[in-house]
Amino acid sequence: MYHKLNDQELVNLYINGNESVLEVLINRHQSKIFSYILNLVKDDSLAQDIFQDAFFKVINTLRKGNYNEEGKFLPWVMRISHNLVIDHFRRSKRMPIFDGGDDFDIFSVLPLKEGNVEDKIIIDQIHQDVRKLIEQLPKDQKEVLILRHYQDLSFKEIADLTDVSINTALGRMRYALINLRKVIQENDITITI
Image 1 (spheres, rainbow, N blue to C red):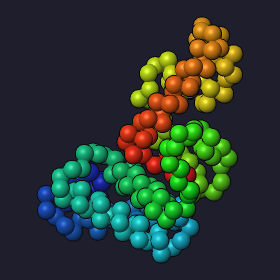
Image 2 (image 1 turned 45 degrees about the horizontal axis):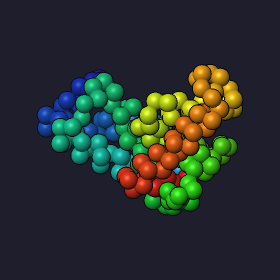
Image 3 (image 1 turned 90 degrees about the vertical axis):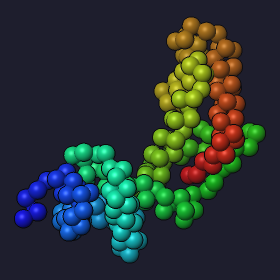
């Protein structure tokens, strides 16, 4: 009877107290979610643990009434699973930790080559975290930093493009790195890779 309902209808029934529909949802998406997790962690028992943790989070979120992903149940559960995998990798300390010391330059420690799927997930997450930090910089500093590190332009090319002297471009980069370091230290952020 419930098998013909779409995910959103099942979620609504569950939120309104029908506990039995959860099994339909889990059975419907179990192989896809589990395969996704297993492909990332390469360990069957670990994948099972993360799968269970993902559905505990799903159940808790639904019970608290915090679900607002109408029509996007599977992508939502996949995102939860993805975040749990990243949390596992970070907890397992598979990456060295860099503190934000005085001479710390985030771009000198960002990995440039791609490894296995696990490494790619971690690298992608780090790049997302760094981009969020960059967004907090003043516009001129953010511009120089992006042009230099993400578009691989020389300081001469940056100076020409932004219509400033090379010294100004270098100064903006210096202040961008100083300000990034401050944000990292003020917020007690540890960049892990």
